[in-house]
Length: 342
Ligand SMILES: Nc1ncnc2c1ncn2[C@@H]1O[C@H](COP(=O)(O)OP(=O)(O)OP(=O)(O)O)[C@@H](O)[C@H]1O
Ligand SMILES: [Mg+2]
Image 1 (cartoon, rainbow, N blue to C red):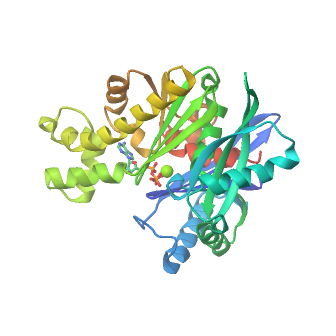
Image 2 (cartoon, rainbow, N blue to C red; image 1 turned 120 degrees about the vertical axis):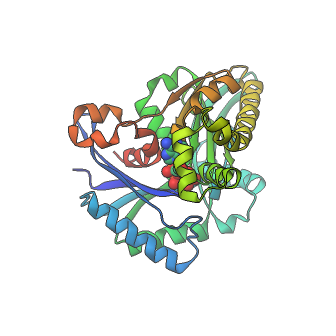
Image 3 (spheres, rainbow, N blue to C red; image 1 turned 60 degrees about the vertical axis):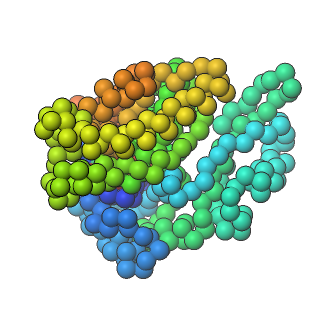
């Protein structure tokens, strides 16, 4: 059994996934989620931190996970991610060059952030060879708070990355067509929507849209005069359907228009830079199941849209996981984290 698991602390729920690797094949050991009762939870507040640790301990115990080591992620909305292109150079010189570039591009003092970077690819051009790098800057204060949460939960944090990197690992593992095509992963979460453009499976860019499922529900509350629980139910049942005179759909559409507007900007930038088109969208996050969403995106963007159900293969292998049917899209970040060190 693997000695660690992946944990995704989202604004609306906490998800855990554990795999083991047998003869180059992944086997699902455990997966589950619990509602995060602190909407807009602020990890800076000590009481939230303690309660969050308790919640993590309970979910872990309910799922029967005995491992005490974790791989976790920071939400993309709390970090700064960019790509750099540097001339080809010796590995020993690269760290210093990245640091110099970071001084110019990171919008915070470097003393306040943890820097992490990785080589994405080597680019050959008439002007010479270049190296493309992904650079992530995470506020030190935030990383410290995450460390405290896991310490309080009695867990050893093996690795902390971003939602985006975990998401990419997941789709690359379970959807190999990503390597043939230019794709966009759309993670429709509660607080924000994360848009990740991939150039034949390699990271191209990421964009955060500060709106998501919570904003959709709030719109339904105010437009249809419902309480939050009822509005949440209407969202899941009616979504963009024309039922109820299309009133639920009209309340939802303004949020989707913002997201589609941002996707179009990304498509434009991608096309300008690569001279190719994004032809496929993978939908992830809780909002991926919004009734009518796929059709809406197909119509607005002119691309193919698939649900990123990354756990479906395990449901067929083991009856114990039948509760995860049509729920894989919800676990893509936690899945990517659970795969990281295998
Ligand atoms: N069937 C459904 N139809 C529409 N929306 C849904 C459905 N199921 C869940 N959601 C919405 O998905 C959102 C939660 O998704 P998810 O768990 O991916 O968010 P999160 O990871 O906790 O948040 P974030 O990524 O913003 O930190 C909620 O707003 C919820 O209302
Ligand atoms: Mg999320």
